[in-house]
Image 1 (tube, rainbow, N blue to C red):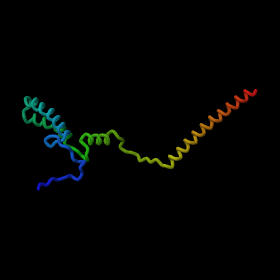
Image 2: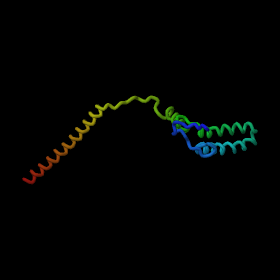
Image 3: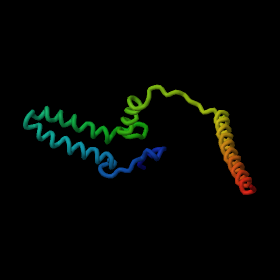
Image 4: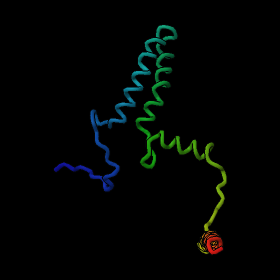
Length: 139
């Protein structure tokens, strides 16, 4: 009887499209071939076969890396983006800041009191205006 290994974590299983490769790998390898092969045939006439082969390999290598490399379930461009952000874009030291729940309650209470004071001032002004209108009508 044939033995077929079944992975325990099925989220790591990727659907294969053609030749045991995923769509991502096929696109990346195709892009590498579109870059490398014409470059090889153009360089071969000027520099010789061995130099053209080295240039072709070096030009196709990034495409193959983007197709094959994966770390912690992330493709190479996601890993490079994380490295770029951590090294250059984000601050080096991140201060530890807490939001004290009691301080938040005190701030909210102060805001509520301020709103109540504003409302009471408006109500007093309306009462004064009403009484002054009544006095004016009485005279």
